[in-house]
Length: 193
Image 1 (cartoon, rainbow, N blue to C red):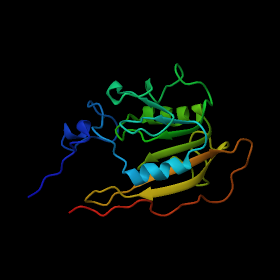
Image 2: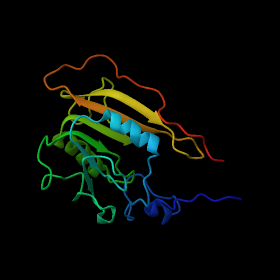
Image 3: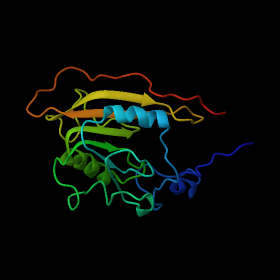
């Protein structure tokens, strides 16, 4: 009988997959780039202007990379939920973020607010949840940021979970009406048995 391994995600491997979603004593780190090349290629098509990649891990995407783990050799070592000391307001046209899934609840809220502070035009956010209201407004600034795209892709996992890539654009002084666009599966791969 086979066993599940998280060898490229040491924080999860340490607990053999028993990592709670709302905080953990284990530091979440990754041992390799977790996005397949076709997903990184697709993400690049979404970038507008100068791009900050917050919570970059091993990924080389972005003009400037920020991560809390110095072993990932980011351009800026720091906490993505509080970048005030290193990243000025609206200093990047696009901010890309794929945060760890075991952050504390308040950290997640602070992160969502911080992403729109440093972005001037677009936030690209990957997670298992969509940080939008039903009308497409961004959870932390629903009057000025709107969901303009939502993409799904399926990693090579046995259970077929998906990743949600949501795109929010700044629409300062605009009124949000109608629903949110949802696009199809991007870069899906076959499941391993």
